[in-house]
Amino acid sequence: MVLTKDVWLPTEAELTVQEVPLGTPSLRAGAMHLGKYCEVKNNDFMLCRSETQDPRKCLREGAEVTSCSLEFFKKVKASCSAEFMSYAACLEKSSASMDFLECRKTQAMYDACVLKHLELERPHYGYHCLPKIHETDRPQPVEEKPDWMNNDKARKLGELPKDFPRTYKSWGSPGVHNPNFGDI
Image (cartoon, rainbow, N blue to C red; front, side, top):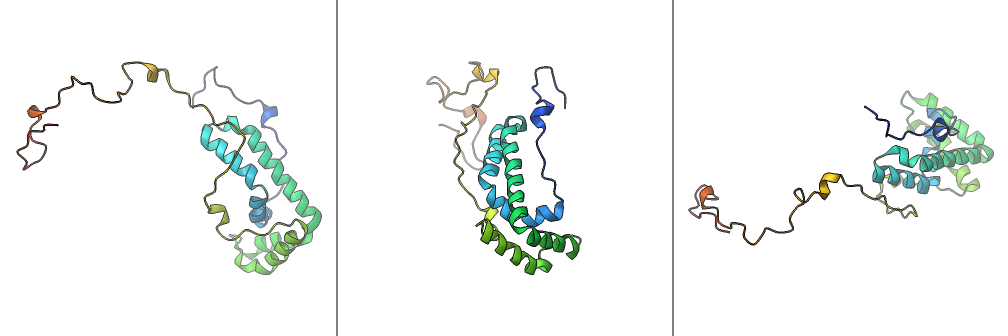
């Protein structure tokens, strides 16, 4: 990709946020509750990415998602650390693909702890795939049209002019076996 001097790139300070220092088993263990806990901020980030088609314009929303994730895992560590770690360890050791099937008992203990201490129920299977309407205070981005669209020669007509020819006899018949000569 070629960049010109007019392309704005964020600074290192704008890109630097505290990351979630967890590995795949831990992220997989907390994924369902994390998705529910940070749903609003994540949906706002994804809406921004979808509407603007430019990740540089959504840095603030991305940082909010990361801070929400950190907040969630700090709460889990403070209240359900033993259950969470046993569930993550079970996922890591159960199979190469970290299947949930072998770890339903530790999952149930973790789910009960999160429900008790964080008052967050595990969402049902498929919850995150459901279509949802997301309300936001962020203004809808203005669609920037290229300059050529303001050119009178390139503008689409709402309807054909009155003097436009309405018969096309020179084009032949509109159908293979139709003797009609194309009058409109």
